Length: 264
Image (cartoon, one colour):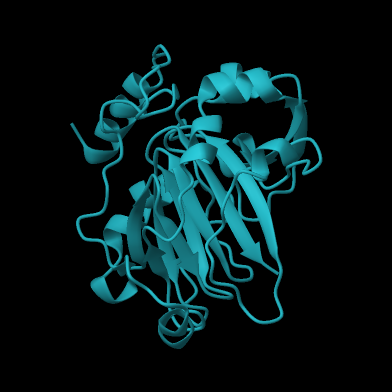
């Protein structure tokens, strides 16, 4: 079977509904399926578990991404983000979904429970970005304040910036194609999120209306080593920092719950 056909077959299997798990490990969120998308062969973003603020500013803040480990304890926030607890607390709240393309033109409002039960499924590899709805970034902070107050953001700030949260939940294979903005952090609460990053001066080759999954299937394999992005899979409890104006695309390898802290 050809590689593209194999990928489609795997994602067809992943789309079969699986019962929610009550196990602590996945918070009751459905797994991503039988290994439809693998982690990268080698993580090229440095992981640091002992970083000081001085080291962060000198070595990473304006220079390159870094994965932070063990700087905060968000176990309470993680418990509150289980499928059962989020549906009980916010099921009737209206959330705003964005299309998963670079410019996210379309917005759709619907109850959170409807999104979780009807739209939170593995990404169709053949869908375009503007046909894919994604819950991330358009949170009503007043309605979600009871959840966000339990989150401890990374302790490293940047002079002249203020933090703003964006909370998201997305199905396996979903993600946002390449784009850039100001600096920030992204923490995975449940699941795994694979990141692809390029410095500001190195514009990636991509189509703004094709999903990250399609880019990984169609464009990534042909990239020479010199054109490959920095990449790594962020796991639950890890935090990725990305500097200002760095290009990045994301791909959720499982049904994932995540929160970003943008420094604006």
